[in-house]
Image (tube, rainbow, N blue to C red; front, side):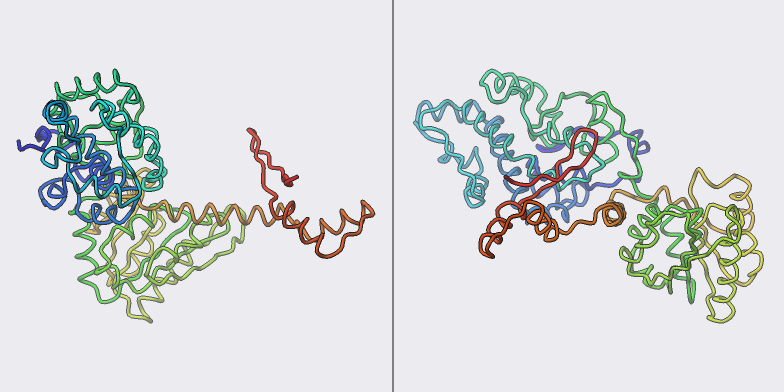
Length: 460
């Protein structure tokens, strides 16, 4: 174990935490100041591409350099203290203990860490803690909305760290368990026999939530499907002349499909001719903006219902697939549906090749057995990494909220102003009206109460 490694991860942990992602732990590793050489080492978990991305962000750099300086002082406290006391040096004159490039980078980013001359070294840490407390929320937008930000934030906040006794207590814990901190960088963590908590995202969020007596239940956000599954998909596409994806929107999840497409290598998915969505009025509105989130051409077929309880999606899907096969020479189909009705399509095109994407809880064992007996590969779209699908969810939410607002609010403030003048029997010259408008009406704002009720408030 070298100077910056945490405890080895056991074989049992490798099984439990397999197929995990490394996005969260790479961001945390960058922010707490883990050395760049760790990111550059392909055998270490933190990823170099995340380091490169965050290095371009000013708020990220500030937190990273503050953490580097704080850890350097903590780790070398006694040596720095002695030289300050005997030689009257400042930490800015001890680059062998406190990295000068981090101090310089803070100043370049507009953070002036200049403790008072003669102040105790523990007060230096108090000042660093204050700067971290003031600035850590600037990094909130870096993390996805599905992770509890307060849990992340607490990692950077030293308990009682604005008082010298809090600094001393944190130092005692840190010195006693130095090898148990991730890469020996200080964070607000109660050390235990956990190995490297930044081993991968699955392990990190599990331990992070347990620390707060909470349970993380969205593991598709921090894990990806196995390389075996991806390899089979790539082999299927690679062995085909033309591939079309047909989607039964009634029996599929748009967010999971989006996550699946985003996590497949575009070198392979670029061979897909098109995605055909078979939809009806009862399905999620997310399907209507899927083409904004993939480079594969999307064709959207809206199907009306003859009866309220009977959909024609299966019939239309089968008919269109047959047309693609016989008229457009499509030899392979990826079917996205958890409904067994698509078996009629498979049996009607014996010369075509099929791959099926289903949802784990929605497809019964009989259908899975039939696929296996027929030599048709299937996979679960639930298993693909979904931590990067927030953009489609946000896009759909905003689309629906704007639709609701358009239906609920019809207000023209110019008409409102003129009507108010008429009702009050007032006249104003144009200049006065313009000043009143700019000062009071243009500054109007929405006020939302605890129950979610909205009112409009004019600035008086």
